Length: 444
Image 1 (tube, rainbow, N blue to C red):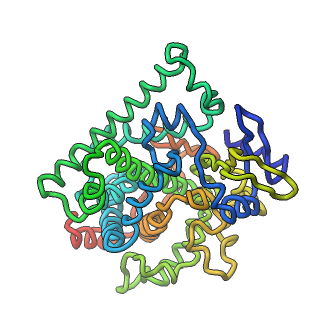
Image 2: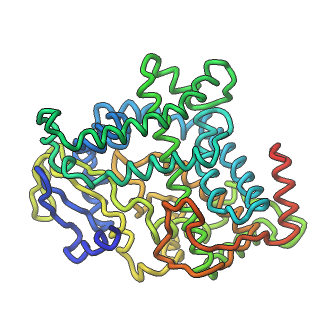
Image 3: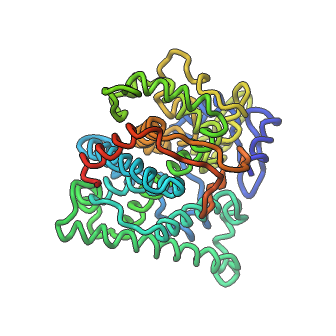
């Protein structure tokens, strides 16, 4: 799919497709995305009706696909996660789980990809639920499967391009049984996760958390909405981080010079070989522009979200000599936009170091989190989550090639090691640091 999306660039900054009952416009450049999605957000922030992905698979309750009238309430409830007291709680969980990530890589380095997955989910789960993640690897794999199936359904069914088909009599909707079964499976897995979270809150056993302090106070009597909103936050917050950490492992073996440049910067700030040695923290972000640029280039080099759900026009739009009618759907082609630069196939973090300081702002000229009013507010949590994990991994571990690989095949959906990497402790001094920091956080 990525090669097809990339090929759309030959048609220019916009590619128009007459698919289904409306015009679809695929945006292939940063400039046009900024003009249409950001600057004209007041009329380009509605979601298209997608009977399969939104209704049958998501029961109309996955916030990312909800129409504005419903979505705005979920958005209001999610904001406290990243502002005020809960924002500080979020950082504490990210710090704790990144220390656990180091311990796990030290104890079983061959399972590095599983440790990435657990960290990505655990950091979000902690602030959402108020207690540590206690799921088995089988349960986490089940959770990843839900996300994979949902994303695979987007832009992949005729009915979502012809939503009028959802109005025909149900006995004639031959697709319905298949997709309803997928939706019921997702709900079952979501409920399995939601039940223990709610029980701990009701029993007074949950710590400071979004579910306890925001969601259940606001959504009393609306358990179905709370169930989906909670799981949407956990799954979205976890899977993209997991895939980005795996991309980091690939870059470490394919572009070792970029890895070493970040390590040098970290050593200069955190004392790589002397008694000053410490783990990097969020207070170091402003002192590590190379690492911030490295993180942003990870997101660009192999984007984990190829297409952003459609932005539907609510008013007629005149732009660049074109007239787009109401209900035109604009789709951000992340793959093409990420290639809208010089030498796109090369991993060049320095492309983000232009003196503006924007290398630490993930949404600046990067569209993987969407844009406009529909931008995923989770980007505010992704920056510290990635910074803590990557700075500490680079500081404490070596990553080496351990077999044949293809840098274009990250195998994000694999249940085994996605590509061959050997992870090893950097030194006995760094091993001691990991144990010391783990003990200080009550992890060992």
